[in-house]
Length: 441
Image 1 (tube, rainbow, N blue to C red):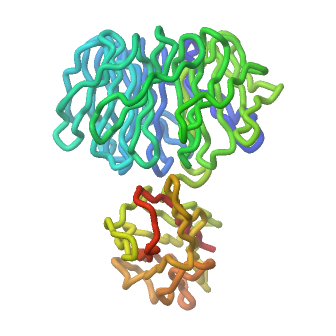
Image 2 (cartoon, helix red, strand yellow; image 1 turned 90 degrees about the horizontal axis):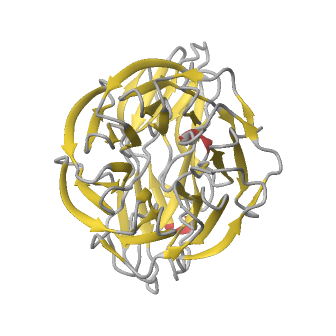
Image 3 (cartoon, one colour; image 1 turned 180 degrees about the horizontal axis):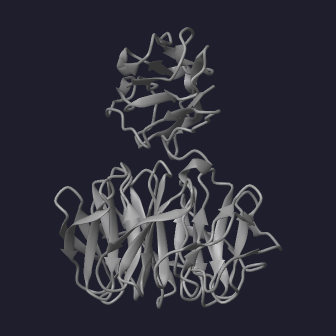
């Protein structure tokens, strides 16, 4: 949680809703936070310092300070974790940070006071909200150039993509609305959704079902049902003064709302869409926030379940081939790596894989694990084997992905599994999304 007037960041344990350790000192006037997909680093834009602080999340220390443009505000990291995009409101530009070196690799001119930024789930596009001219600039992340602009409502303030990438939602502060963008055509679709007064920050659940919008002018949070793009409920009870943002945890169970004027954070239970009567006290003037990606599943993201010195690293997203009804969608998930640094005399472990969320699309029947075949394949890389790939088979239940049953000492193995989904002949057209979960023990 970025505490603007304290020049620091508070860390909240979402299992207990309590503060962890002491606040982390960053630059002047922190406004927004974004994290790498693997959760190892957090990037904090410091609006009054014209720089970005890089936090090592393991020991909660600042490891680098990166100079950017004037009055940096919004910040977003690409799904592959290689770049961070920072909007510089005062200099009408977007700084692109190389996260491997933590240096600015390029600067993109964007007219209209860029305020916020979001990256599409496939990583190909960045949407930049321009508060000064009521537009969204569309950036091609391959070339880091502006390809087009989209006119939205008055004084837009934030943007978020749906997990399947088909839509984006933009808050229009002065209009009191949310615009819905069809990302295939880069056009606003339908009528704006009326929410509370002065909507600012927003977030969407990883399953794509609901959008939460913080309304500082009416001290409320609007909950949008994305299946109809209408407001399903408005939360006012136990929402504090001047709520600035809404941030969902990776497991979709909670949404955190920093109350700028109350110096605390409201916690919403997404199952009931009610806020806890107890707020979490933080620093002065909290604003932007980010949730650790290790807190739960996201779309085609893999849960990490490490034990002592035994970890598994997985890709954030994967896209299978397009397929007609009755066919088979296929593709590789990307590299999965087990790293065993326990230095044991008997270094044995088993990695398990399961379909923890069926593949679904709007209006269609779910495709369950019995139709999903997982093939581990041979090792891509390995040290101190041997390792045994699991037998290819369906994910009707959890199955072994890889294992090590003999040997000693530190070891590691990487594999690139193939996923085949048998699509029923009566399947409806649409984008199907599901969650594959790997663990190791």
